[in-house]
Length: 205
Image (cartoon, rainbow, N blue to C red; front, side):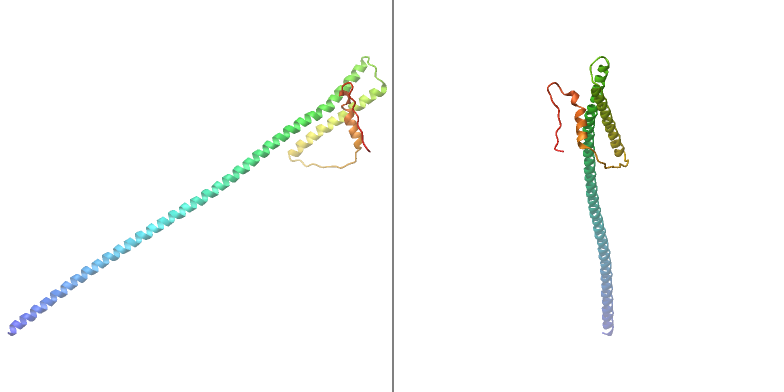
């Protein structure tokens, strides 16, 4: 009986040992599974963080690209507006120059015609036309006045060209006889009046 009891105890001990080993094996398996799960979790976390960072970088890149593109478009529109305004100013300046040249050609033609006309009248007088001394002196005076006017116009054109090239302009104010200026202007064109046309000048001064 004692032997059987010892055998039973030994069997119980062996059983307990087997149970302990089984539990240790289960514990090892559990630990291994937990370690595998932790590794998998860390891997998934790393992947999620990497994907999040990549998506964040892509979003930042897209936003930066859009901002830079919008800025570039704004600068391009500004440059286009500046170029358009510069083109308009250049066209307006060209039109102004054309109008100025047309006006100057007309202004130059007026005293030039007077000079040519009175010079021809004096030349014809030398060929036998009857002109009094007063008329000759008047014609010579008109030629001198229109020559002075023509010289002034040419000086003004040269002055304007110098101003456009950046030269400084000095303005000098002085008194003048307005009636005399008007009379000289009429005298320079009265020889072109056709028959029956009377050219006159009136003033309250």
